[in-house]
Length: 81
Image 1 (cartoon, rainbow, N blue to C red):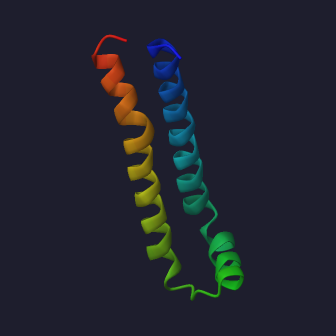
Image 2: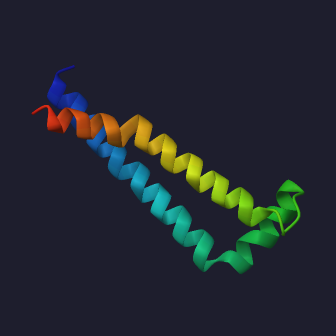
Image 3: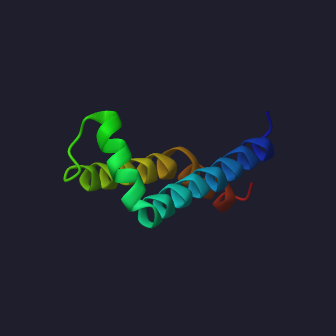
């Protein structure tokens, strides 16, 4: 693989991970009244604890996206590749 291909991989990975993060965030914000009871029944977690779990999930996903895709992509772009 060439450096250009690796840069393109990290670029598309960044775009996809940001899209999933935005979709998930919007879905949790706009469909809260539907999602919380569903997840509460499926997972056996009380409805009061779910917002904290959602926040933790979004924070972990954002951190993972930054470390695995966005930072390597920006590093390669700044180096001139």
